[in-house]
Length: 189
Image (cartoon, one colour):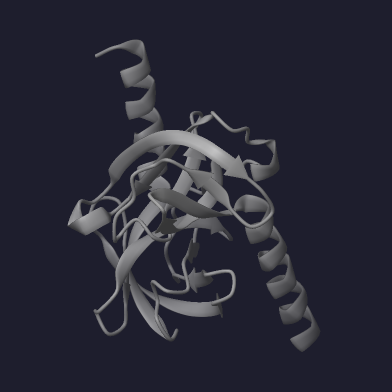
């Protein structure tokens, strides 16, 4: 294996440890998710992966399954936060998407078409406050999974494919959404 191949394989292996497979409560939707915060018990995914909310099932690296509760969902941003009690996953390292440049190498790890932990590699086409756009090959099941730089730092959550390009919600938009949720929970308490 070449040096580049070894680096990509090692980076993908680290990302897989923070990536889960997500099934909605009805069993009709399946996608991916990323351990983003808390004590490794907060998973981020797409709102469209978990349908109407409620409960979901996450499948961790190695096949262990756990019940998750959808604690927040935003269809406009296509984000959902899941709490998985009693689970401690390695947290994804996050990079500010604003620092990502067109032409930069990115990796997507997810569960497309039932292929658990599949890796896809491409280049960033553009990045703004709404989307990180890359020519990464995504398929159903990649939704909610990480889009990461070559060092394995997550720059976005994969959301959709349009005109053959992958669109990911950028990490800054995710951080702002999580902060609004935290502030809302503090006000409610």
